[in-house]
Image (cartoon, rainbow, N blue to C red; front, side, top):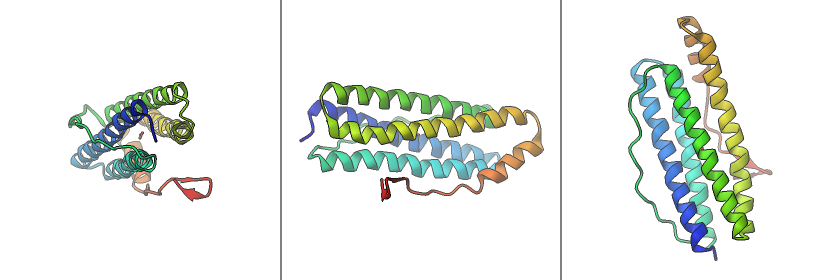
Length: 173
Ligand code: FEO
């Protein structure tokens, strides 16, 4: 049975992941509005990634005999200054998620919760990837500068992203 203090922290993380999903959906709407449909597609895939993260924590809590309680999910922003501004916000957001995953890992260690620790190893690696991906797009947008053709080339590239459920050690995560 999972300790209540760990359960509460995981419930808070579920809310953060659901917020992340809504944030990226809002970003998808922004990109769609300015006709950058490839960027919008990338964000829509990210919505699914974040929902996957939330469900992974949710299923884990239930598996450990815990109680999943879904708290209030704040509304995400709806406006950004530019296509670059959106990805800068996404990068900052992923950094904050990394911080909360790290705090959760510290708590699990303090509580000698080895099973939660194993689960969090997956999330720690996932955050390395999440941060690297958004950082690369931020840098490419900076390189594109005011070049519309570079922006549209990147947009075409991001149009090809599809959601692939993450796999861990040969089994679905
Ligand atoms: Fe669920 Fe993008 O972190």
